[in-house]
Every structure is written in C-alpha cells, then in structure tokens.
Length: 457
Ligand code: UDX
Ligand code: UDX
Image (cartoon, rainbow, N blue to C red):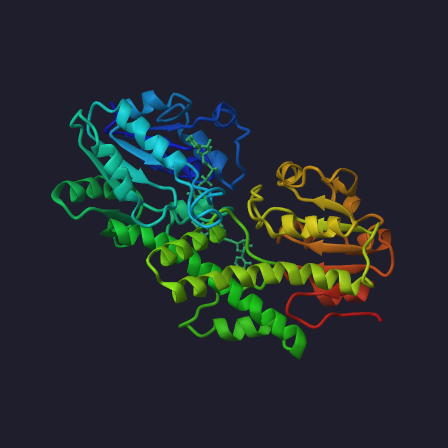
C-alpha cells in the first residue's frame, strides 16, 4: 500500500518533470499526473514524451506504471489523493482589467472549484504554478465556501527549476520553498510537504516560510535573474561603442563574490514562459498597491529586453547595406535557450518576424524546436523555410544569426558553411557562442554581442 497519494493537475513543463522525480525518489507514494489534454497524457504514456528535457525519460521510465501514472481523469485523481499539486498554466491576461500585465487565473480557479466539487476527505492543495501574491487567499475562499465541511489547506511550493536542467535542478535544488499559514493545521500541512522533499533534499535546503513570502519569493527570484540579464545587455550596447568587450567586463564583474559570475551572459534577449510574465505580474501588483516607482523600476527590465531584441535586428539590417529584401538569412536555433524544445517568448520569434516583415527569406534551423517554430511563425508562408540541417539552412544565405546557444553549432564545419553562402557572408552571434576570431579568418564578417565587429571591409 502507498503511504501517501499525490495528484498533480497539469502535466506541462513543470508538473511532469516534478512529479516524475517525486515518484522516482519516493516509491512509497502513489503519484497521479492528470491533465485536460488527452494528447499530452497519451504522450506521457509513451517514450515520446511531450516535452524534451535531458534525463527526463529515464526518470519517467523508472517510476511509470510502478507508482507514477498519467491520466485525464482529473476527478478520480482528486478524490483519491490527500495532496494535490496544481501546476496549470497561468498566462498573462489578454483581456479586460489588467490585460497585458495581470495573471489570468481562470484555469486555477476552475481547478479549485473542481477540487471543491470532488472532495469528500481533507486535502492539501499545493500551488506549484507561479501566481500573484495573495492567490492562496482566493483559493482558500473558494475552497472553504463549501457546505461539506471538508478541511482544505493551501500551501505555496513554487518551482525554481529551469528548462534544460530541470532534472538536475529537481534532484539537487538550491532550495525548496514551502509556505503555509502559520496556524496549527497550516503548519501540519507544511510538514507533510516537507516530508515529501526530505526523501532526497538535505534538511538545510528545505525552507519554510509564511505563504505570502513563498508566493512573492518566486516572482522576485525570476525578476532578479531577468534584471541581471537586462543589466549586462544594457552594458553590451555600451561595449560596442567603446571597444570594450562584454565578455571581459562580465568576467571581471562576476569575479566579485558579492556579485557572482552566473547569469551574466549578454544575449539577444531573455525568453521563456516565466521572466516576462512574472515581471508583468510584479509590476501589476506594485501598481495595485499604488507603488508607482517600484512598478516603473521593474518594468524597465522588460523595456531593456525589448530594446536588445530590436537593436539586434536593426544592427543586422544596417550592416547588410540597409536592405534585406529577398536575402536568405539563416537563424541558428529557435528555442528560447539550449536543451529545450520550448519556444515560449523566445527572442527568435521576434527576430524572425521582423526579418520577414523586411521581406527577407528566413531559414530556421533548430535540433528540437522546429515544430514549435512552425506554430509560432504560422502565416509567413513563402518567406519561411524550416530545415533540420543547419548546413542546408545556411546554403545560399547572406547571413547566419545564432539565436540559441546549442553546443552543436560550435562543432559545425564553418569552412563548409562559409563556402556555401553568398558573399560577403555575415555572422551575427546573438549568444557569443562561436569562436569569432576563427570565423573571421575563414572569411566571415563577424558581429558578436557587446564586442567590436570583425569586418573585412
Ligand atoms: C508552469 C507553471 O504552472 C506556470 O505558472 C509557470 O509560470 C510556468 O510553468 P508549465 O508547466 O510550463 O507552467 O505550463 P504548461 O506546459 O502549459 O502546462 C500546463 C498544463 O496544464 C497543460 O498541459 C494544460 O493542458 C494543463 N491544464 C491547463 C489543465 O490540465 N487544466 C486546465 O484547466 C488548464
Ligand atoms: C527561469 C528560472 O531560471 C527558473 O528558476 C524558474 O523556475 C523559471 O524561469 P527558464 O526560463 O527555464 O528558468 O530558463 P533560464 O535558464 O532562467 O533562462 C531564461 C532566459 O534567459 C533564456 O532565454 C536564456 O537564454 C536567458 N539567459 C540566461 C541569458 O540571456 N543570459 C544569461 O546569462 C542567462
């Protein structure tokens, strides 16, 4: 018999890997992962998982059918579990009050009502999705508005995993944050969740807090990470004007142990499902409480990101003699970062669209994200070419632009690529991934980020 029965509603990038790791590490628990999407659930039941994440398949295989189950029967999973993680998506609202900023909580609320409807025994409801501060309050209000007198406790356990390293992040987290009400029943529920992670996470890394701190910490962690990228990206623009190298500056700055060296890579911009959404959320909350200056401060992190994307494209057009009409341009990478198929908020979407709006012929190549690219760029028809093979993408192109830091691009035969391209051949490295000196020697005009370009004319 299983000692705990856990359900997770939402089998996406967060719910799927998190539950797979819990199930693998805790064979004594039963873990049911449920989702409204039949296609997603079917894929979780095969070896062709719905998301690409290094190491994920092995973890799933270790537990699937033993104590890890995937299904669309959300109601049964609610009924049969004591602990329910909710990991449905919370996109930015596109309509009404707070459109473009506030989180759209309709799926969360729907799930809360489903939990209420199906529950005949006490439940601990765990917020896994990133949510605006005080969402737990709303959830409690909904769950406690029941005539059934079923006790519910709401816990906030934000997920800090990053895509591409999800399994490692889950196995060896910097910290696990568990927030609860500080009432006797709240503290007891918190302990239940602590006990799950204690199966593999050292106790000093399991952090307890009040529920509002936990909810806010997730937004703040993402805002701080994004802010570092915007900070270094702002400096990359300055480096290009001053013959400084952003690589040297970020190394020098990052060696200050108070600052630290990670998350200081200049890029064409940050993407992903979280940074933009969470900062918009933070801005919205600040505004809600009348905190104008904090709102404007965090908003500027997003403005800098948009500036960096726009600057990258402007630079490409200017350097290619101010016209790209009819020119083939190869985008190397489309995922928002390496080692994922995810393209949500990828800067490559913006870059590809801008180039095609300027009537360029864009060839997109990516080892994992072409299917998503097809969806993101639907409607561009003739101007768009999606190709598996990077050599094929570059053939006949005037320029290659690196959008994603896939390791495999380093190892390509760049001589061969150069030979197959139109001349002069341009290379715009939006990730500072490649060996710029070498490419210059091959014959490319090379445009790194935050460093002087290497040009033959
Ligand atoms: C997660 C978090 O939940 C989100 O808050 C965070 O900010 C980003 O990461 P993620 O796992 O990436 O979301 O989202 P997604 O891959 O879209 O998965 C959500 C799943 O929930 C989808 O499979 C969707 O079908 C499912 N869902 C959604 C339900 O099962 N029921 C619903 O009512 C809505
Ligand atoms: C992020 C947070 O890291 C994670 O803790 C949270 O749970 C979800 O949001 P994720 O979006 O998966 O994770 O990826 P992350 O590695 O943070 O990268 C986000 C974006 O920033 C990517 O587009 C990446 O390429 C970019 N980035 C990252 C840079 O441009 N420079 C850097 O130095 C680091």
